[in-house]
Length: 617
Image 1: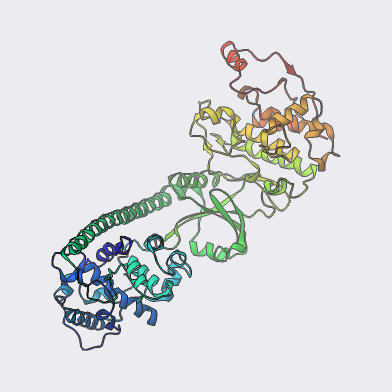
Image 2 (image 1 turned 90 degrees about the vertical axis):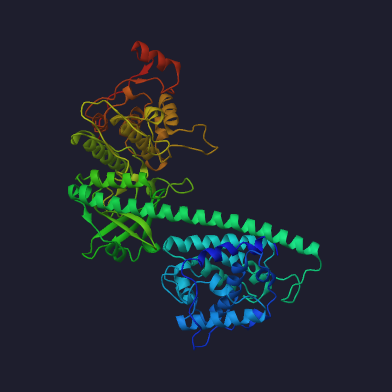
């Protein structure tokens, strides 16, 4: 017997050692399991004949498991129908062991009472039949790829790993389950392995039954040396099995403890949210069943968007209202913070260029786990990113110049309201193309306020953890965590240049010598070729006005905070109400020595370019 063939012993022993000893007498009813194999199967009876041997109980549990696996294959029932049949089976099992000169008292010593093998919904996530198994574990599991064929040493180890994975999956559905691993090995022996539970390879690997070294069920050591060697091997295997059992129990306990703490924190979060956040937000509380009906069970046909931390479904409420339902993924304390933050901030805001939050939902169950949902007004034209870029770098649709101009102005108006129309102001922190949504008339609305921060009266900036999207982050914020209204202005400048050019903020193609859109746009503007910044589809538009939008984008995305306008001033520049100020000759990296000199002496670069006053026509 090799080590892998004994790996299942500790699990079987652990799973069956939780009740009182079996003391009930055999009942009159017949056992539904054919146990005739007990006396003919080539299992190693030596482990139960020598009083000094360890592992007899594990061997007997494995031996009985062969019959239960065959019963499962024949009837689709994981356990026995009632206590009477279980008692009859244990009595029959005891009698057959006695014929092999094995002490009958081992049965009440090794087994629990007669009910331990009786079908019970609490044994493993409500599983009683193979139909239940398919619903909970799925029609295909990790067992199917690892527990088929002749289970040699390597394949047996892979089968064991697969069994632990499926056990973890079932344990996650019901942490109070006590016999899921047993159900896993019964299913693998009965249905996954094509040779069936009465095959020696299946019984040895999957069920962990020790085999005799010959084809008979009576093993006789040839001499004292072989006896000593056998005891030494069993001793080593028993020690290894003990270590594996301890490790497995520790892992299972830690997972259970983590799950228990997670449930407690989740309930605490719901209580706190309902009592402190929801009453003050004005957001509607949606039930999970209401959202499931609206999205047709969160059907993939209703999936309209997917990002790093969430998926969005199209929904139709009972009153006919179209909504977008966003499910927050990768739930942890950070995601909960962002979820709460968005509900608190955006539900209080009403502005035509900010996406309205209708409500939210918090749900939890054994199948779906912890879930968070945000419900918004539905935007039929999707995100700005959908229209600007294609997954292969090609534009998905051609936005006209008037559409681009209006989108830029809409975003500026929305941000201006956040910064200056509220007291205290709000910093969005994640302004980018995919967070700008378009309604049926192509009017833009700023969305996704999960990272938004409220400013503090009397403070020039906030120091906070850096969050947002690479490429859109202002340098001083990315490097030092200093958050001001100019942080959003920088992101807005990048967005302006993307809209005007149809080019992404970071260009990784080999055809371009510029990585950042700001370097590329500035170089063209300085060379007098600013029209080359324009997307090809809009180059027939009003050049003077379009140049102004590009220059405002460059100014807003300046590396130096002091040179960036406020979003309100940027809006006035776009609308032609004020001049664009003098710009430094070229935005330099923050590490450039001239910036260090300027910061000490309060000087600005003497090399500059004066941009003429222009008006929108």
